[in-house]
Length: 346
Image 1 (cartoon, rainbow, N blue to C red):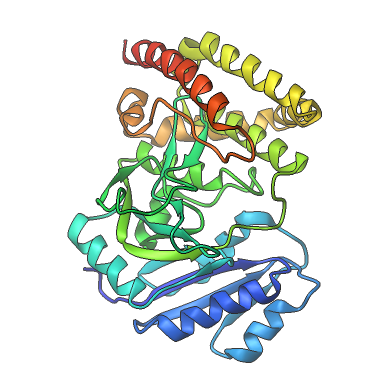
Image 2: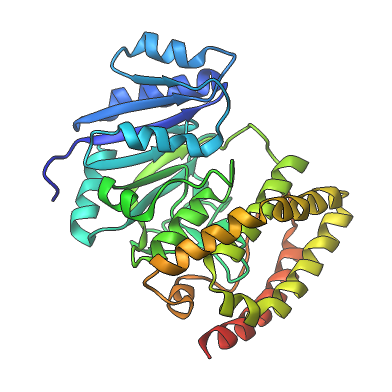
């Protein structure tokens, strides 16, 4: 147990409308522990942040003059007074005793990053995330997403990384891992954060005793811009978080995966998003290389140890890939992943 139980809840807002109002109302209604709520507004035009402040004057409101993306959370982290940090998306609804349950789990299992079971806010029987996972090719997904919750994911366990929708940890751990990387702007920032934690020996955990409703961000949905950010940011992780030795070893397999991804993008008439991602990687190559060098100096765990918490599959929404195609793709990924593991472990 740290010296005090004050939790600093950090929420970003960008034209959140009633969604952010519902989120913050739930926090004040259901949080009995000591907490401070830091609301960071990324230059919203709908004035939803002002409505939240009007409803709850205790809110610490920070207004940015431009949209800084998810890296704006760093502002809240710097101002946080709590021993504990909660990174919470504005499209969530919390339950009773959620902070207490996080504190209990943290004290039972030790330092780490913790995420709850996320449930679909529109259908409380459907899972949104039962722990977030990564495969060896940087493809990240929410385990169990879209499945009916029958208790199949009710066991506490280690995962690859915690969902950005809700991550609980201590401020000390956040300071060890470092800032949310502004390179990402949106998507995969949580992959990067959890992966960097694993490199420092900081595990990620799934705690099913806590359930939080998650609406799912409506900002980009499944747009060309979202595909661009997901693909670009996946490659930022691969290029900066794997050692150069590992990256060279698995490069031929990554190229095969890349060809398959490009074919899919072409079929979906989104090949421009793929080209745009490659172009952006070239533009940011110096920053990516600088990041890789910093991580090389600070990392504790080897890639062979890190990938023990990675999986050999990929799952995604049926909106993107139907079940038949998903089964076929996963059989290919499984075969490629087995080969990649052997190469990394050599």
